[in-house]
Length: 222
Image 1 (cartoon, helix red, strand yellow):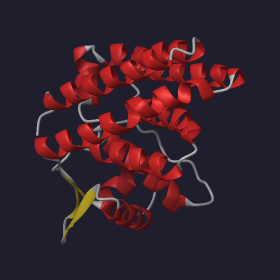
Image 2 (image 1 turned 45 degrees about the horizontal axis):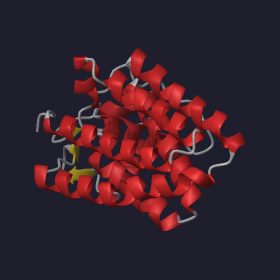
Image 3 (image 1 turned 180 degrees about the vertical axis):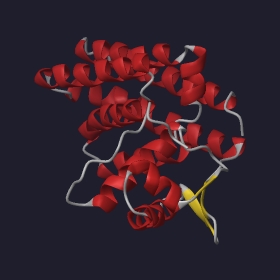
């Protein structure tokens, strides 16, 4: 069960279902909800201070994304991924993200760089605090912001889907081993390369970043 260190009580907002879905998705992506484990809607609802109904509705949405599977009379199991599936996704990311980052580096306007740097710093700060849920959201926003300059929404959606399905495996382990800070700092390095208009350097850093992530996946217990 995700603990109070990473997931706080849900705010009362217009669409409770969307809010619950977002928080559960982040918990799965960050690894706070572990692959293979079964979670009941009432227990999650109690944790978040809501009824079981919006949790069940959120889990239906997440099952369509392939992040959870229904376990009759028990709840929902977080989908586990094989090493082969993780290899396939890493290979696809390598094909797409480094050349795209290299391509968009000259396109990113100067006045957009401070906002990117702020997002990158937030990633570093959340890593230092061990706040994996907020780290995951900041990481998502940062990479999406850069990829948006490709002007290719299919590409942005595909990468977002790939990243969600890998669920940033091993974040908890990285935090425990003290390696999350190094991965987080690479986001600031990337902003520096973008600001310097070093397109090749930015693409190469993205390759190393994905390679580091895949290496950490290998340390994630199945």
